[in-house]
Image (cartoon, rainbow, N blue to C red; front, side):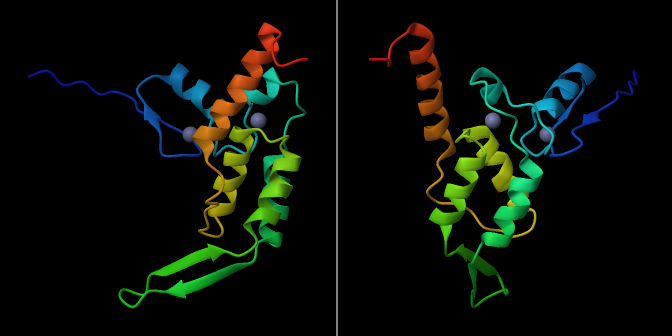
Length: 142
Ligand SMILES: [Zn+2]
Ligand SMILES: [Zn+2]
């Protein structure tokens, strides 16, 4: 019989784990649940670092939401009533960086279980990458 004991490295912020310390260290730095994360997109765009913690705290105070309880199991649905207003604030403070917006939303969701239906991470991320590439290639500037 061969017994091996291996260390597992867990992310301090989310549920991710790895057998490799270096990989986990790298991940923690950019983990979207880490309020002090380094944002590659913001670096690329030379944006100021977004203060995820204070942006999410202020956004939390702005949110107006409605709770509807479902008939069975006492499950409660939470709907945001002023999504556009809150999302505008977040976008402004994060320079519309999709990763920073996602980080803020994840912090908010630790307190209120709301989602922002008009924020489509994948679309915004792709649009952002297209802008970055256009700038690099000198397109998009007329
Ligand atoms: Zn993580
Ligand atoms: Zn960012």
